[in-house]
Length: 407
Image (cartoon, rainbow, N blue to C red; front, side, top):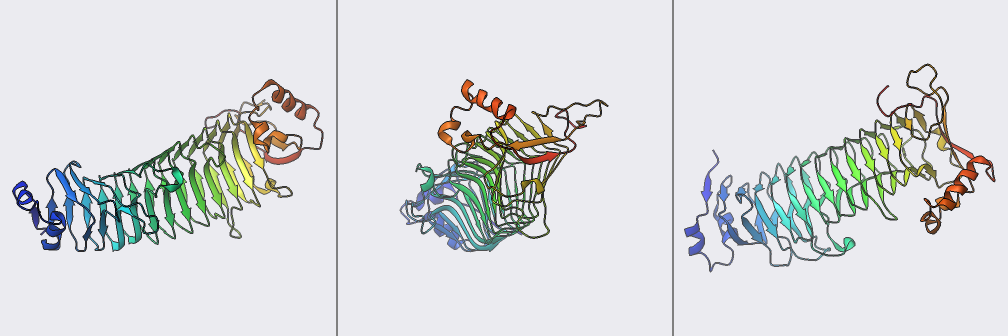
C-alpha cells in the first residue's frame, strides 16, 4: 500500500527558513510515499533518489531552480512527478541544464507538468519503459540554435511519449533509442520537430508539427513506422516535411505534408541492401518541392499518394543517379494530362515526369524567387514545348489516379 504524505500549509510555514523544504520532505519520506504539494513556490535543484509520487495539484505548486543546473533530477526507478510547474534552470549546454533529468531509471512518469524557462525540457539518459505524457515545454528565450532540446532521449528504449506540447524549444531528439512510441505530440516554432539518429523500431503517429525548420528527420535509422502525422509550414533554406538519410525499411503512411519548402527529402535511402522504404497514402500538397532526391536513393515504393499543388513535383539534384529505379504506382498527380476512357478512375497512359536541364531556377534561389512571375511562366512553357536539351525521365507511374479519392 502506498503511504501518503501531505505537505500542509502549516508545515511549510514552519519551515520557511529551511534551506530546501521540498528536498527535506523527499529525504525524510519513505519509499513509495506520495507528496501532495499545496500551491506555492518551492526551491528547486532537487534530487529524487527513491520511488515517490510528487503531485503539484493543477500546476499551482511551482518548483523553481536557482538559474544554475537542473531543476529536478530523478535517479531512482518508479518515480512519478505530475501536475507541477517547473522553471528557471541553468543555461549551460555542456551540463545539459534541464527542467527534468532522468538518469539510468525505469518505469518513471512525468505527467501534466508545465516546464518553462528551462534550457532543456526533459532529458532522458538510459531511461526505459517510462512515460512522458501531457507536458508543456518551452525553452529559454534564446536564438533558435542556442535553445536546448525540448525532449531528448539518449540510449532510452520502450518509452511512451504522448500529448506533449513543445513550443519554441530547439529539437525533440531520439538518439540510439529503440522501441519508443511517440504519438499525439505538438511541436511549434522549433528547429527539428522530431530528429532520429541511429534508432530502430520506433513508432511515430498522429503528431502535429507546425512552423518548425524541419518536420521529422530520420538519420542512420531503420525499421520505423511514421503514420498519421501532420507537418505544416517547414520553410526556409533548410525547410522540409519528412526527411530520410541512410534510412532503411521504413513505412511512411497516411501523413500530410503541406506548405513546406520540400515535402519529402530522400538522401541515400534505403541504405541497407535488399530493403525497401514504403511511402503510401500520404498527402504531399502545396509545397515548393514534392519530393527532393539527394544522392543515390533507390528502391523506394510510392503507392497511392496525392501530389497536388506543388511548384515542382520531383527534384533530383544528383546527376547520373537512376531515380527511375524507385517504384511509383497508383498515385494522384494534379498535372497528369491523360484520359480515362473506360471510367475506372485510372489514367489510360502512364504519368511521366521529366527534368529539363534549362530549368535554371530550380537550383538558383535568387531566380526561384521569381518563379510565379509571367517571365518564368513563359520560360517554363517553352521548356516543355521546345526544350533546349533532351529531357531526363525522373519517374513513371503506370497507373496514375484520375481523382484524389480512392478508386
